[in-house]
Amino acid sequence: MTERIAKFIAGTGFASRRDAERLIAAGRVTINGARVDTPVTFVNENDEIAVDGVPLHAHEKIKLYAFHKPVGTMTTSRDPEHRKTVYDVLDAQYKNLKYVGRLDYNTSGLLLMTNDGDLARKLTLPSSNISRTYIATVSRTDDNGLNRARRGVTVRGIKYRPMQIDVIQKNVLRVTVTEGKKNEIRIVLRACGCPVTKLHRISFGPIQLGNLSVGKIREINQKTIDALLKTL
Image (tube, rainbow, N blue to C red; front, side, top):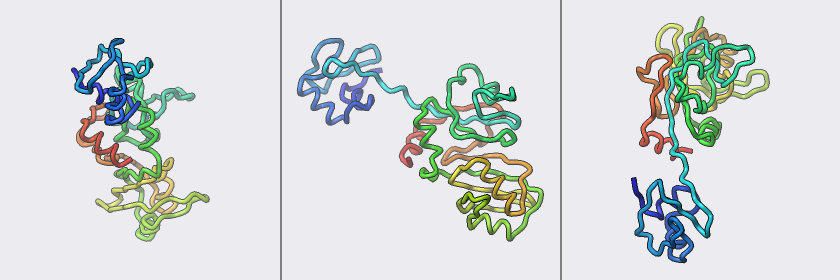
């Protein structure tokens, strides 16, 4: 696959496309050791591109995956208690992926995985305000308690943002949060008199778990990734 030299330079993060064209015009760019004199020049993955003699390397394309995490797995690469981890479930080709946030041992559902550590970090920042939606089964419901959770509560000195909570059926709730603090839903609902017995994540931002089978993984299309990146 070929692309214009200015686009390649911009893709490495070295300069914008317009600045790349200025570098070319100034005679500072070479392809395989030969100076480039026009931006209407095409390169491929086998070419060696340099600016002022310093080689440039294309960024690895960002990849994002939806993984259906099973109950009874740790979101970690190594567990000191030797419990099963998500990497024990994933096929070998996905072992190098980074998880986006965590789902606890007894929580199932959508876990995002990526090859880009910076993206994983940004997606979990509270300032990103990315919504995550869960189906929570509780041992009992209390209207006053749920209303407290909807307004936002402080538990043991930690403030939790308001949650969007819809009652689907008796003792089954749809809960949406944007903060992503550790065990947030379990802690808040327990404090509000509605202890969680089962928790399952169904979405993370625009990405839905859908009918993905337990323990399976699927790649997210580029259009969805681009839409997600624009929100960060």
